[in-house]
Length: 511
Image (tube, rainbow, N blue to C red; front, side):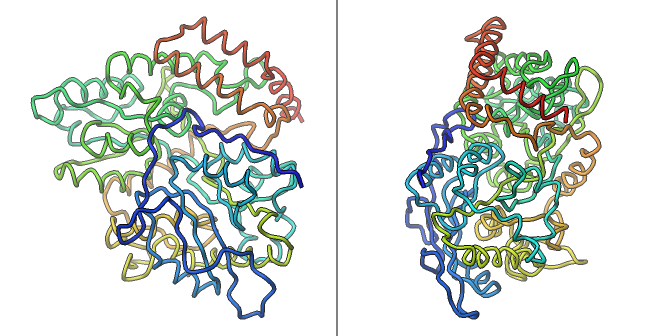
C-alpha cells in the first residue's frame, strides 16, 4: 500500500520554538521515548494465558516520563506486556508525522487533539488504519462508549477510533484571587471587566514588590486551545462555523471575530499580555503564570490544581480561583464546547496485521474500561497515590500523582460515567469550583455545527487554508496588517478552495 504523508504542521497554529525536554526516571536524559517492560513486536498468536505484547505511542504532558510503577500494575490486571513510547506534547505532531511517514507507527497510536485527528483523516480514508466499529459489540465495556461522541469521530460513517472523553464545556478563567482581593476586584462579569482586571494586574503592582514586572494574561501560540477561542466565544463568535443569512459560514467571516482580534490587539499594544504569545509554547505560557508573572490563564479550568501546585512553590502565599460566566457585549453568556473527546487512538494496519491481533489489542482497552483498571490509570495505586473517602478518590500527593500517574490518565479512554471510575475529591477549593462550573457551562455551550460533517475539499486543502487565516489573525493582532489586509486573506482563502468548502458543508448541513 502506498503510504501518503500526512501534513501535520509543527504548529497546529504556529511553530513553537520551545521543545520540552523529557528525562527518564533516575535522572538520565532520554530522547523522549520511554519503554515499559516489553518488546515492541506485534503480538503473534499465543495461548490464552500468554500476555499480549502491545506498544503504545502517546503525547507526554508532563516534564518527565513516568516510572514503570503504573505500567507493571496495568500488565498484571490486563495480562499484557506493555511498551509506552511517550513524546513531549509540544513537538508531538512532528514526531507523529515522521513516524507515520516511515511506516513505524506502533499498534496503538494516540493523536493529540481534534486538530491532529482532522489531519489524519486522509490516511484513514486511504485504508491505513483498522475500522473497529463492527467489532465493538463483542466487547461489553467498549460498547458503553457514548454514541454521540463516537459519531463525532467517524469518517464517512465508519468508526476507526477509541476516544478519551473530555468535559464538553470546561473552558474558563484561572486567576490570582490574592491579587484581585488586594486590588478590590471581583470576578469579571463582562469582557470589559476582564480587560479591567488584566490592566490592574499589569499596572497596579499586585505582587507588592514596587516593580512593574507583572502582566494580566499569559497566552500561547494556539488560537484554539489558548485564550483566543474561549474569549471569542464570550464575545459572540460561533464555534468554528455558524449560521448567517440561512447559510453556514466560517467563524472568521463574522464581525465578532474581528472584534476579538481587536480585543487581543488592544491587550498586546498595552502590554497586558505577553507580547510574543504567537511564539510561546504551552509550557512557557504556564510558566509565566506559575512563576508569578501573569495573573490570568484562560483555558481548561480543570488545569487549576496543577497550575496551583507549581505556583505555590514559587509564591507560597498565592491563592487561585476559577471563573467562567463572562458576558459579551450582547449581555449573554456562552461557552466554547468541545466535541466530547480530547484525543483519539488509532490502530495502524502496518503494525497490526490481522483482525485476530486487533481483537487482542481491543481486549486490552476493554479491560481498561473496567472500574478497577480505570481507577489505576486515572488515580494510580490505592494508598500510594490516592485514598478513597465516601466513594471518591483523594490524591495523597499532587506532585507524585503528576509524575507517576498523569501520563496514563492522559492516555485513558472513555469517560467517568462509561468506566465507573471514582470521581475525585478536590485538592484545593478552586478545583471543586471548576468541577461545578464545567457543569454549569453546559447550559451555555456553543456547539460546532460541522463537527460530524466532512468536506472533501477541507480534507484536501483545509490545513493549508487554515494557516492562511491563522497567519492573518496573528498579523492583525500584531499590527502588521489592517482590516483590509485581513479581508484580503479571506478572499485568498475563498479563491484557493474555501468557497468550495462552504458549498460542501452547506450541502451536508441542509440534509
